[in-house]
Image (cartoon, rainbow, N blue to C red; front, side, top):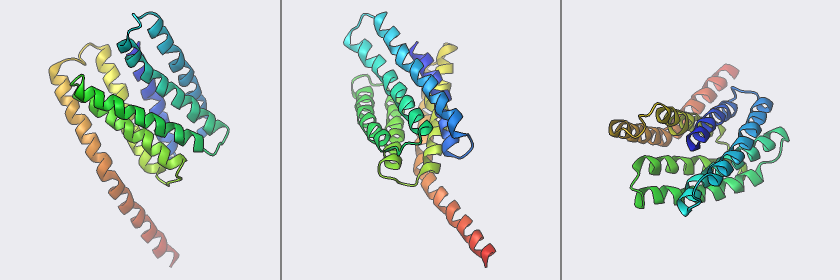
Length: 209
């Protein structure tokens, strides 16, 4: 059931990325966030109630709440046209929690894929903090990061799990490379976007002249 939550998260993060990139309409995306957010508040309760309720069960189920609350908060912020300051502070808190999950994945579970995945989510939530609370104009960059992560950290891993190959050692090695390449692209993208913006401004200036 946890992988179903990942699958659904992939769909809503994909739409959110398109919204940030100016390719999707805000109201419809906002309602979709609410819909998925409600589902992802319900799913972890079902998982916990049917589990042995050990500390590991809670550890594995808690992240679904983080995604669900984020989508609910984001959806309400978009639909009500709120300032977003509260959403940003919440995302900062979630990013700090995500750091703990990333470190734990590496140190305690020796799980490189989950460690890298959580590290990428740390970046995404922190970017939402920078945008919504500190008012940094980085929507295009966040949109790119969210678009990539919707596929490489959520949708495709869930699909690979559904078909039963996610734990295959070869798939694991391939996915470490995919995540590493994605992280490198996140580092390079600000320079690419900055160059693109300067080029657009230059063209606009010449046209105006």
